[in-house]
Length: 247
Length: 261
Image: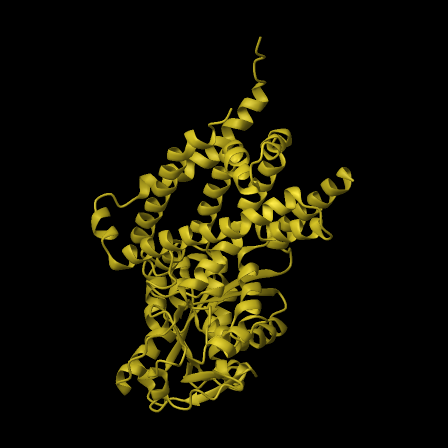
């Protein structure tokens, strides 16, 4: 029994070593804004089909938090951020000459749980009896939500500030909150959510602007190809199919 | 005559000690000593500290009020399903805290098993409240107390208890005058562990209670979120306060719980 456990551990250890440099396949590590989760599974698949020598691995989270990871030298090849500030943070200590490419936009939307009729307009978020969750102000979604509320002159005290937009989605979809401000694409992606439009969300200044860049330190040829793919016609098509707007 | 410890054992022990010492030294070395006062006087820090201390103490009290009787029953009483209850009571110790948080949501969330009834009948919703934080902390920390107490209650010399009873002492008096004094060191150790675990709880808290300054953003959450926001100095300063607090309590109680030897 002891021998079997040792053998299993040894096997796992060798497995861990070889998967990193899979001989033929180059691993491409991508960090992307949480709201890109759904679109990226299709983008990854399409890119890998066109480039069989590449294995794309994506991680998602709040753009500002991801930027901090990159600044701490996380081994990342491509960064797809939901705003320019996070991209600038990620590139701050990097060699110059990197030009991030815009590849999508996204509109804000109020998400409510299916069956919960409490919220039908932006103003309802200010009511005391409505449980609202928002993204933390550091991430693009949180900043934009704050901006949208300020413009409408609505004061909201959320019950919780969540670390990224998918965490807000999770709380709303579970019915724990009556409403959250997320992106249009998030509402489309989750059948548990019902969307309430936000007036003024067509204004580009209230929209998320997604930029992608191949991080210079890593010099990965596949990284440049991936960023090019995001801005290609096929990439645009996939991204639009998930509800994102054209850049 | 004491045998000399083998070199291998001593070497391994030294490495083990380093595993604990090096991170602590790194924390001290990297701390923003110059701007410490400024970092610690930020409202975010004061709120998080106050909340953490209040909730961890409340969670420990609840753990004691509910956990000690359970530990007693597990140690002394015979009832069907005793082994199962004991296993379930220690489950939160091995469960990943986030999983605990998810389970709490499914039980006590607004649409949860018990939570939906609470909400419909009383309008009470535990997520996003300080009470929710206390519940999450108690959930993860109680097993420590139960385990320590059960062992303590089991190890008491029954003959002394029986003697007290035959001399006319009531059950409560026997407990207070005979059982408690002999189990006190173990109980105190259990309480301290329980409190420390409650203080450090993160996964269940952030999943079940959310994060909002002053209401649910405890110190571990504040440290994590500051780190994510690129405010490493604030995160480190707060971490040091927690470490100092923990060390302080451990040292102060060291005498107590090593007492009965």
